[in-house]
Image (cartoon, rainbow, N blue to C red):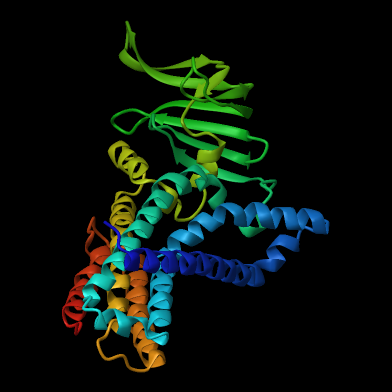
Length: 368
């Protein structure tokens, strides 16, 4: 049952959380725009088009920025709330009434767990839905640029390439599909001058490329009466090629680090298919699991800096909080950026082993 104190703290936390989201994400967007302004204007578009491209680029990226800053945003909201309570001597009144500081921390930790749940929903539900938009470069915000698509493996094990891929028009030029058999030998080659994408329908669960002048050569084994088994080439002129590699998937696969935009479910499917880098998939999976835990650890590291029976200077406590939590954030970023040579998940969990221990010791030493 929530008490009056709990509701008061939660209301203050929510206000500071909304303010922190607006300030930090706006600052992120402004800094990124300042660095990459020339990327939006280099095509010479009119001002209205440039502004439209900027809005179209940053709107989906807000979800990514929130995922990167979620732990810091929660920490800022909680520290702002406690700082205000200390400044107004409200913590002193709470302690005088016989309420433990651990009881004060309870709604704050509950709020941190709730915002961490938002982080999980963002990374597992919303970001995968706009992953193809997050993979765009600043200078291709409108999706008009054409580029090569080279040897992308689909769920059938075939390698798809194209000399030109237009994300906005959903078409390919000089399409090439190479299939191999179980032994890794070439089994068929499909070529087409161009192809246009047809999305899935209720009666056709898989999408397909409509081929223009498609030509497929399939290798098979024939029994020759004189020479025995020999290789034969069968020629076909297919009209369609069914695949899971649609325009959005190709656009996503072309980007560097595209695995980080996928959900854990998508990563498990890729791991089962064996169509991507297994080391990168394992690293991304464990990083995804470890990130919400690190967000909670950041909060637990910051709480003891402000919860004290004998409050000291707020600026000194804020400096200690920034130094310790900043160190945790930087170490986590470095550890999650390390690419192991083998399928090892250890780098993603090192910050948790270290800073979770420190957080537990600090929380246990709160004088209350």
